[in-house]
Length: 240
Image 1 (tube, rainbow, N blue to C red):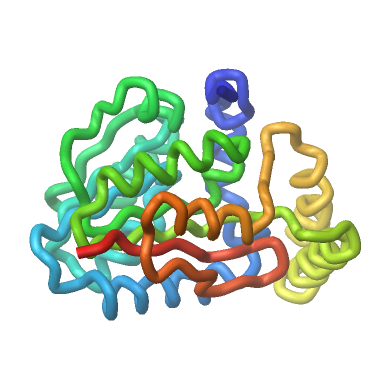
Image 2: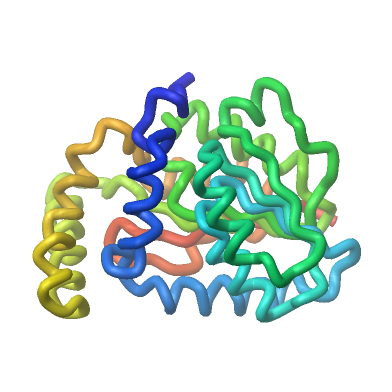
């Protein structure tokens, strides 16, 4: 199993750079957040108990946005980077019932420090660091920790099914940065798509095998809810 400690995400300076730059190189980030809020509002809110688990929470932005929809939820933040957890704690300082665990996905699968189940489990731009067998193991873990009727939402990058599409999607990503980001910041962000492609820590898999894995595990309502090039939002629910 790939090691978090040997990846760039264990480097606090790299994690800080990601937090500072993410708005500039994640296409349609605001739209993605709005769709996640809508999914929670229509398919999750109203269930009891209202507990959310954020796997690879980063600086807590996604949870902060969900708390705007439902300020009464209890939150568990999980990340392998203590720097990310510290940033999330600062961002969410005004909210009660926010807990955190410093653990990588590997720690979760081997030791499982989490005892609760959750009505909503999400992950954002994190699971693609696992190889496919690890992704499937994590999907099974998520299914076990969902309440009946609970929902799993994964926002991540995926591998295109053909080389032609992969090449175009990376160009599409670069074009988005070029058209949405002002100088002088643009110059530092335009190389990001190629850096993503060259980074050995990134091991994305095609979308379809991941959807099929979710179905095999027993998820319902499995679908891709949004896609922009290599960026996809997909998941499913646990049967009642």
